[in-house]
Amino acid sequence: MNKKVFEGIKVAEFAWVVVGPTTSRYLADHGATVVKIESHKRLDTNRINGPFVGGVPTPDGSMFYGKHNPNKYCISIDLQHPNGRELARKMIAWADIVTESFSPGTMEKWGLGYEDARKIKPDIIYFSSSMQGRGGPHSSYAGYGQNAVNFSGFSEVSGWPDRLPSPPYGAYTDYVSCRFAAFALMAALEYRRRTGKGQYIEQSQFESSLQFFAPPVMDYQINGRIMGRNGNRYPLAAPHGVFQCQGDDRWIAIAIMNEDQWQSFCQVIGKPELANDKDFATFTDRKRNEDALEKIISAWTIKHTVEEAESILQKAGIPSNIVEKPSDLYKDPQLQHRKYFVPMDHPVMGKQKYEHQACFILSKTPRELYMPSPCVGEHNEYVFKELLKMSDEEIAEHLIDGSITSEFTGSMTSSF
Image (tube, rainbow, N blue to C red; front, side, top):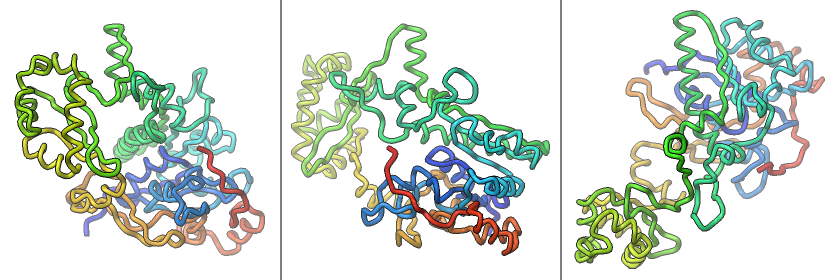
């Protein structure tokens, strides 16, 4: 078997929630050894948010956490404890990469910031992600991606023109920022390979996310136009939207992008006369009468199951697809063919399906899911003894003084 791309790379992950853990998954899925530093005293926020297996909140029973953290080891250190921070320094000395996503200044307060880390390991690659970056009047603002979607502009343009803004689901800025971060780490590894030098990578989720908002920002800069909410409609297509089909909350997405598609669409829905109707004959006509057009389409789709509608339209070359529910995704033949979901046995949650984070396949060193998400402190013995080469006596001292935590005593309360 070929060596994995990142085999031999060691990551000390102080990052939590979404952006940091998702970033390191790219490396973990391709062979890196990733060790999460957590604590029973203050759980990763993802551990206290569902879905929980069996509907019962427990620190090790969340698949929200599970999604972001397979292929990783986990140790439990109290970073508020001086001896816990000493253990953290040992982890930094072991690592090639350190990742953290606390509020700016937190790691520095503990003596674990970049300048501290490079004294321990001069060629360390150190990645920090925060809401709005280091420096500036808003640098200290803490929060989650659910907050950042608002000041990044996404909420204002999502939803319907006659209703309140409808933010994208979840921590959207986390899920786009980690893509930039993963490739920044890869570039840093290549730079270190060539020069022997490490570096500090500092990310603002605000700025990373704005890359996906560039067209409306530029439109305002050039033309003074402010993008508003427009439901499922799209300026360059008509019709463009989702339409209800037979069944319980079943919908199909349809997008007509040119005149050939429009002609074919009129034929397959049994209304060839629409192609030359004065209200719909041209793109401009269809945009002007979009409300009436969508009613006509809905009257056709509601007579068909979503599978029937998709088959009819796709055979005619019409861009269309089922609006899939989670249950549809698990049965999707394309995802099944590419082995996107991988079943693994978790010590607390039982057999669960984990999804591949790296949505690309390298021909010689393919991605691999081989270990489920860890329980809190599950790998203390392995990491401290095998990776850090600590003695049983040293480990026992840390357990006695509480710098290695061993028991959760708090309450499982959602922070979202």
